Length: 588
Image 1 (cartoon, helix red, strand yellow):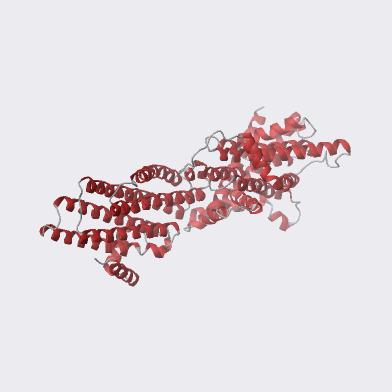
Image 2: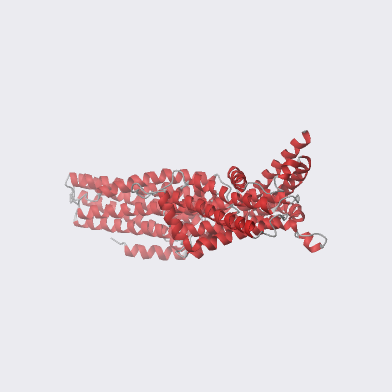
């Protein structure tokens, strides 16, 4: 009895190692792919075939169809993908998840030939652990460390597989009744429920298929027993996506239900076809013993054939999901959907989405800069409602982005991604502060209108010149951030210096007007308030530009103060030329 308990401990310990190794390998692959995975996900088009290839590729990279499907749910929730595009990604993810089973089945390679024995995972596993440990412990290169994690995950995965296989050999030998469940035909509904249940519990079809392959390694698994279990495993993997749809918008919930329909319909078609053929003419391999490679073949065939059969009916699946989950009311788009926690499963996508949300935040701040100009020029507050809406959104963006980026920073990130997230956190505060200074300018405009303050013709002209420079520096900073344009980011600081000089000139000239009684003290207070807040906007654009440069190591910018001190002290050629250009443009 004790021996059986110990074998079950070994079995579940092996399963734990298998899951950990698969997660480590997938994380390593994803981090090694880095921004490439992000670019792959951005290439989704209306072409359904390309969407299938996309789902296949991403799943092969991150070793989890559940994670890919959850991402699809998140992208639909964010409005990045349509339901139709998500169908292709889901189908591709189901095919991509079979890659793990094919790697495991390499253990079925017949021995005796030295070059075939070398490529067997049981041989490669200890070698992978040695290489991975050396890279992780002794390599100074972050990229090599990531490769080390990938290779180590590979080794742990197969050692876990060996543990499961060895323990099952003993368990089935000592408890024949348990082994007989896999050695004869039984109620297919029960098989489907077992496969679905196990997969739903461990949240991984790759792992549950791996367990079935461990059973197959004992030499007792028959095709008629494996068929319904494999079908159930494909259904069980839908649970993760269904759970991720909770709390999402209606189209995201429809995406998760499409994943379920795809596998249920495929299972119904396969089960019906096989049992009809078996009962009418018989299937030669119905009672054949299955190996790990046979499971890989059948698993791949199921997903590929189901995809080929249902691909022409993608719109039908969308229609079916809409009939299942009916729209009761119209929902406005969630501006924070890109920050959905579902994307945390894939850090590179989460970082990419955070940047997109930050660009949206930048655009709101820039719109308020423009609205301030218009309210000033037209001397009315007609745009105040829009201004207030933007300001509220900016405050909420700061809170949500800070929360999201903090959670991302706690994930396992490459050194480069970790530095990028740190820069983004600094940038969020600066973007929100631009909004605050715009609000201060709006308050000065309200004060100006309430007291019927007017500036001199020269003062108003100078004010418009300053505000035009502020609009340009703000637009330039946003464009540099959105397009990762390091050259454009370097032009922000020279313009910021011109704006500093411009503010000093405007203050000095204004003091002269006050002394000459050309304007009142009240108008002077408003004038100085506006130009002071405008200059602070330029300061935060400078902070943003430096943070943008810090996201790229090749720029060599690590410390903001040292970088700015170097620029102002040496005034390199590009800086000096740009400074002179802007000085001429905004001369007053």
